Image 1 (cartoon, rainbow, N blue to C red):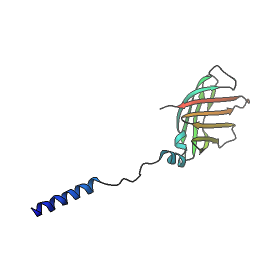
Image 2 (image 1 turned 180 degrees about the horizontal axis):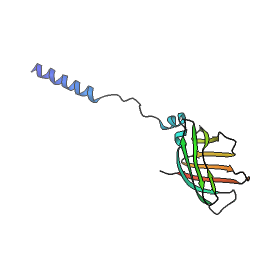
Image 3 (image 1 turned 90 degrees about the vertical axis):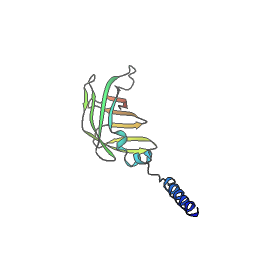
Image 4 (image 1 turned 30 degrees about the horizontal axis):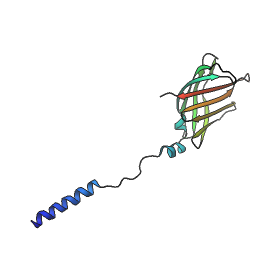
Amino acid sequence: MEKIKYMFMAVLVALVSMTVTSCSDDDDDESVSNQKNPASMIVGTYAGTLRQPGDNTGGAPCYVAFERLSNTTVMLTRFICEKYGIDIKNVNFTISESNGIYKLNPESNLVVDGMYINGVLTMTFQTEGDDTWIFNGKKEK
């Protein structure tokens, strides 16, 4: 009887030790991950509208696509708006993040300003004719 009691206790200890394990926090905290790799937040295709400041008609359909070059750099691979004849390609941006706001800074002499907040991309730029344009769009899934 003493032997059975000992074996029962040994099995119980073994089972408890296998089921009670500590879990480390291996899950990546998304906000920490995105601070180290802000380009990952920008990469993708956006659908939205393009308009000029003061234009309250709703603007014209426009599409924008970004490709990741590094953790902090993306390339604008396509910015197209057929209605206004705008087609911009291959512009690199450095991405910086502060409090969930991602700023796009062009690595060229183009007059472009961009910001990404909660899935919405806003870009303002000037064409060679000094026309100012504003794009607002959401990332396509």
